[in-house]
Length: 220
Image (cartoon, rainbow, N blue to C red):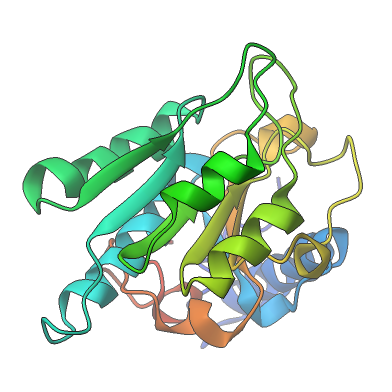
């Protein structure tokens, strides 16, 4: 209502005022999920956050030499469409194998089946913290530990859990965590991607522009 400046334009007063508000918000988001503020990237919503994580990791992988590239993504069959569509893009365009993790009639993942599906080709695993239709909770910490033991990144969409349950990115053991503000009484059109480690600093940006969000996401 009162601060209209571009938070990236800190050479003038209203830009600095806007930047301060954004950084306070970043601190609040980080505190809510146990993350470091530097590892919280604001986006236009969970959809963009998910796309940034998946495409960012896959682009990183694609520039590696062939003997170090991995060629498989795993997602739960009940994932949000944002996850499935982003993963399918790499399957259809770049011939990366997409493995769908099955669930039982109650929407639960079999840990044994999950372990059997994982292999050394798996680059990224995506499993939602809470399903957006059933509310079913997945054992993210256990799944992430198994995936990371095999050298895979782990992404969880925590949108449905925000404000309804305790979320700690370190306890969840995931590499990336996606959020959307409007599920927790925030404004529509705002989300965030949080990283548990400095790995988030090296994601390839999928939206170019003015180098905002520490170079991870162009756009005012």
